Image 1: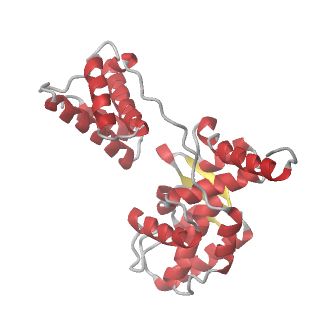
Image 2 (image 1 turned 45 degrees about the vertical axis):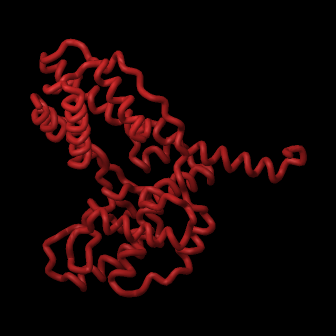
Image 3 (image 1 turned 45 degrees about the horizontal axis):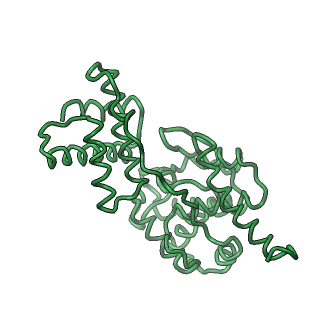
Amino acid sequence: MLYKDDFLSYLRFEKRYSPHTVASYDNDLKQYHAFCEHTGVLNFELDSALIRLWIVSMLEEGVTSRSVNRKLSTLKTFSRYLIRQGVISVNPLNKVLKPKVSKRIPAFVDEEKLNHFLDNYEFGDDFTGIRNQLIIELLYQTGMRRSELIGLRTGSVNLSEGLILVLGKRNKERLIPINNDLRRRLKDFLALRNEAFPSLANDSLLLTSKGQTLYPKMVYRIITDFLAMVTTLEKKSPHVLRHSFATHLLNRGADLNAIKELLGHANLSATQVYTHNTFEKLKDIYKQAHPRAT
């Protein structure tokens, strides 16, 4: 496919997108190319009519509107790149309507139930137990993403100031405050880490039992096993703890802009989705408390 490799290099080195994001763009372009060939168009062709057919095909196969729109966004970004390179003059996506997406309310764990469990569950006093508890506490108390957690280094933690330096999307750094309890947990874990791996060159903060950097599937398994004991939510993932962090802050009156900065969102609209959870809670309170609510 002409210009695809150059486009992916542009995303990787100039836009500084993460390897995961670049791989998603690559996969979307390959899927559209395969659809072109399936319909008899041997060469990759950015044509609005063909793109509409691709949309219909994906929706008929059960692909969600949200996923379809993400793939269309990939084509639109690629088209903009081709325009800048002088390959095409008009973006074909300008004539393509995106399928409507129903607003998805983030899943979160009940605050009282989550904190009661964290206060009373015995994770164990060995390296694995202490590390697993720290993983859960970090995700819930800071709202960081799984990739950000894995990317933490020993130098990311400033115990004296009570701050953690997080490297977010597009290599954007942000500082997240931590409370005294989490500060103590980090201090104890660092001492245990140094004792278990005294001459380790790897400076990743969180390690496997063999001294290697944590990997995404391992974090996912740790969190899903934990959440299975705490909630009956169908969706159980590290992101649920991020959603819980934001929702619990908002329910306790935190400023939306402050939550935006803590989460590392690029704009406020991404953070505003949590107001729907708060609104649902307010409706429940109203129904329970107001004498004429029923």
